[in-house]
Image (cartoon, rainbow, N blue to C red; front, side, top):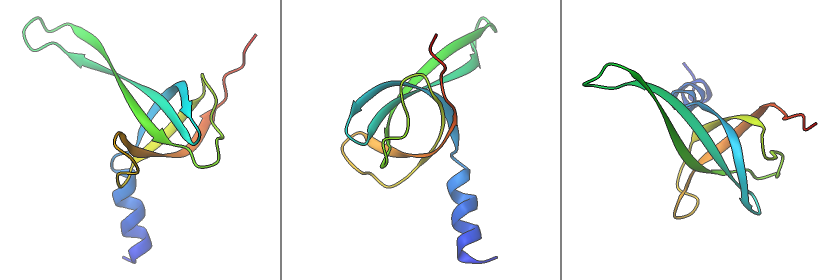
Length: 93
């Protein structure tokens, strides 16, 4: 296994999919990742949302887009995720 394959495999281990909720400034977006977890006592499914600050170096994502993100080194105080690709653009009517 080469170094590039190892890097790609380890980077994709933390791959998440979410929706862009806000553009927080230049090269920064806020992505909302929704999780469905089972409540430990009542055994009902509960929706949980995590908001992550994501580095978008080319400013390609807009609000409403579905994106893939991956963890990376800390870029700023709260920004430790990087944009991999835009899966689908939101079509505003």
